Length: 214
Image (cartoon, rainbow, N blue to C red; front, side, top):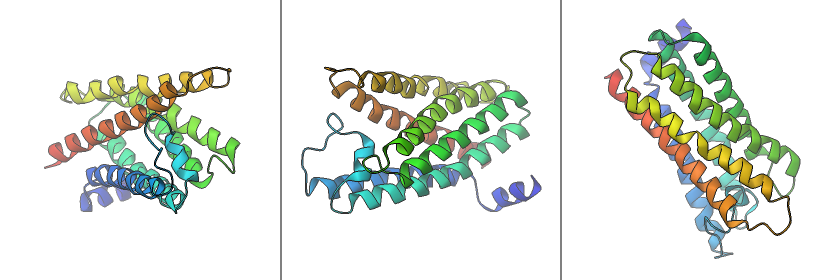
């Protein structure tokens, strides 16, 4: 723990939140630009995010590398957030559950990056499940942990509870795709909304920790 505390004294841990979001958005945007050079039909209503991982014109390489690096960088932010809450004497049980959920999301992100859907469908699905379930649990438990700290900003703490429903709704909608005659627009769109809500939550958390660390 002392090693980690000294590390984050040298490098403000909130920076990892900003960097992780930046890498994720940049890789998706660049992959999208490469993809539409070959297939201009790609939109947030017609293609899942993971379709970029199988895309043409090197979009797959950009997306998959970005996913792996963003997952690693975000883990450093989750460690920092966990240590901050521990130092603020937040309740231990939700903190441990929070970080365990963050690890689940981290492993899921690595699986998604290493195992593209088209060529390794089952490992990719497992990774996606880990990622979205981890995102749901992480945002809920971190919110509970933050609410247990008396002086923690309540609006920031509640952001996790606002974000939490999106990944679960997506998972439920995705399951419906295994039934015939289901329109794919809503599940696809909800996956993108889940991603954007997760990005927003990360930025809110990082901005708050950056502010209180000054």
